[in-house]
Image 1: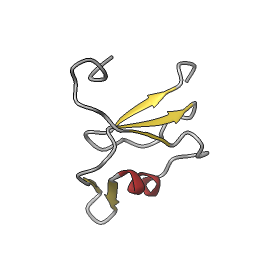
Image 2: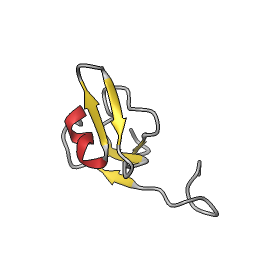
Image 3: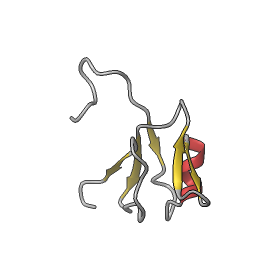
Image 4: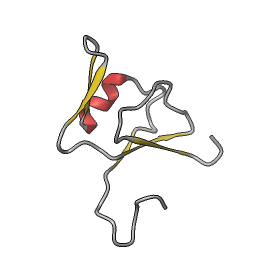
Length: 74
């Protein structure tokens, strides 16, 4: 699926599904730091590639390089 498995490089998936609503600050520990002054994200070298949000979609546009995984029903 997409670029997972097979001969692809390993990917990092962060599970934030336990949070009631995901905010900009919740992405900081997984390597995606938001700057309100610049209205931009900075990705650290060890930033996650995917974020699993469970059944609650993230309500803002994610930075380039970060993809969201949702439950099928969502």
